[in-house]
Length: 104
Image (cartoon, rainbow, N blue to C red; front, side, top):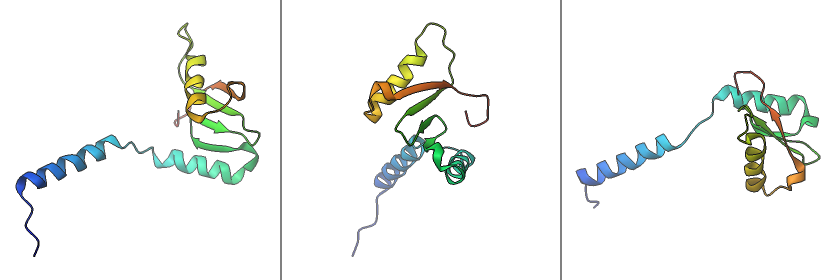
């Protein structure tokens, strides 16, 4: 026969579950649907796992940057971070300023 769970164990489990729930970020459904629909309608456009990133069929990575370049080097640093994480060649990564739409 199983032993009943103690209050301490229940609170411990509840707090861990709440922390996990708060730590997980879920992107809005409409952005996912827009990306999935764009892939279905235009396969030549490439793979777009999020609104901020596009990988074209020729393996060019485009990073959409929503920050303005005012001397901090954001147009270089954000694509460099993405290139490092994707293990992509730096010559195959470029940036584009993000347009003023809801998904950005």
